[in-house]
Image 1 (cartoon, rainbow, N blue to C red):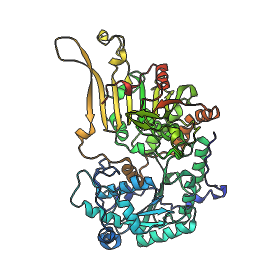
Image 2: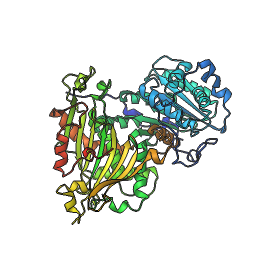
Image 3: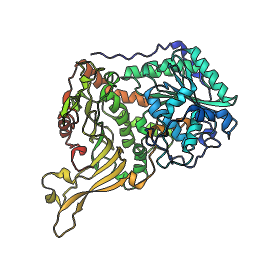
Image 4: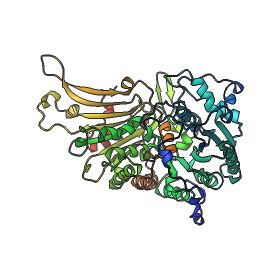
Length: 571
């Protein structure tokens, strides 16, 4: 089986095309101090919600709601000097409808957006402004702490949404978009953000057309690019080369939404602002680190897309590897984006290239339980019957530096497993000469201290410690020191897309991926992926809803590790 990824042809004659986008692409002081008229208190206090419907309002007729709140006629502006135009390219797709538009409304609902902003949808689908608003309104939701003005704010937001139909490779259609943007911007200085919610094979076409016909001439222009960023080192480098013919590196925001998750954001805070953790954060005290991602459902209609990438490219090479770099990096000079990303790149360059013998693969098969039949991966009509694409993978990675030498970093990711979770598990070394060793018997793993950061669901941080059970005897028990977010922080946790969209608007790049970081990440995985496909390694089958293939346990045992999520004492 062979895979191909095609990007639009990029000519070397376009070397100076990056100048086509406004030279004002870097954030101005005004951007860093936020927008006039916006409520900006503390940058790290985002009170917002996720994009999934929780208390969706009934859809009102357009004539009675959004249409009566046209931005130009009903909204009093604060800053008359600049505007923000956000264009969602691929506006009719699922990602835009389920995540991007709800995230933008969430930011508006909590007054994190500037007063002079508008949202534009661009896609091939023929649609009017009113039809776009109707489509968006079905997925918008107010907060759990819903205020009385929720319905009014929703209508105000919809009144700022507009639509332009066009082909992704048509400069003429992007020129029409530019005309519409300028019409709504009213001659003010304009900042423009493009979100590419489209397949990667048309990234370059869209960037080319936007750069030539729809970039801002008076402010900054930025582009958010969704993964996948290629499927190996060569295709990723080609994509970066093509994008940089029209954009500078500072204008490209490669989004990995997992970096916007609350617990991932809190990882560096936990480590660098708590004196108790930093001395323990090394090979001297940490026995292994586990990064675990599991879903309790299969491909469910995404099989055609997934089969071309597989679980390693879809989850491991980006989401889990990004978390690993944040976990393992040295203390950065500052919280500046470049300082943080420099340290992440150092980690990647210190890592040993992943070997096939340190990887185990799996693919889920059909399973019947309680009279219900759960289909296998190849039962998906969009997946070839002879597909050997892995839906599960476990891998052991190593960092060859003074802090982490010899510590296995185990990754595990899979679909159609027994539970849905994403977490970081840090297992500490056994206590040397433990006085209470006899109370644990021969299984010292039961005495292992473990720090767990549960990214989703039910965000939490807890530390497993050994404790005496009250009573006259000497009986020990593993107990949790637990910070459960929903108990400690009753307000809804923001969706990752809200934080990342806000960062892109601000010009804050610390949670976005730099090109050299991307190159280093692919360099770790590409040789193994190439060997995997050349040898046509057949994955081990595992039942839908199980804990995954047995091979994952053998891989862990090879490195003297026991998977922490299979201990049975986690809630």
